[in-house]
Image 1: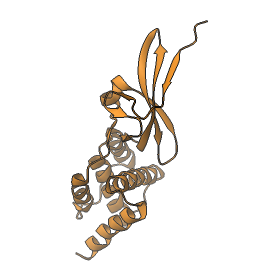
Image 2: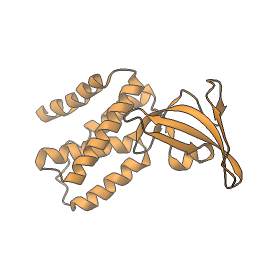
Image 3: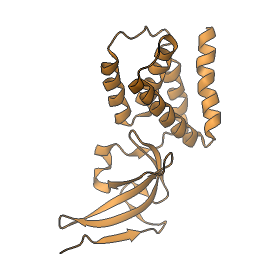
Image 4: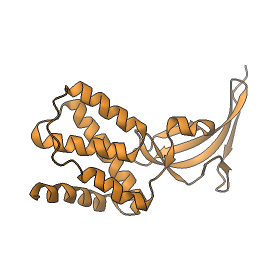
Length: 182
């Protein structure tokens, strides 16, 4: 029986494609992770390189084919110049009318946005659910989405700002408290 062969590369100099060992990257719907290794494995008789990524939030390990990075949405952490734009998304549409869609339609739309991996889309989900939460109780599914969006947002913003998560939490809470008085 042929066993898949595996070559492990843990040298900090190892690079294959876009990311190198030690780089931080964002995997859609899971958040910020660190590229721990780049491994070559033989799958179906063909040799492929994989990024081995550990998600910072929960230590989950994900294996991503290096040739499939774009289609799975693996991307760099946002740059510092983008942070004010993300904050603007969170601040915008304060007068959002209560959404009259059914909760499951909202859930599907929000889940699709989170799966894109775009922090802008995640910020929209967080903002919309935060505003909805002010007017009514969220369903169990919406609450889970809210928590997911919140966690993804906080982790990436704190990584991008190179600051602790509590600082980012305080900033975001400030956006909503100042908006309530306007």
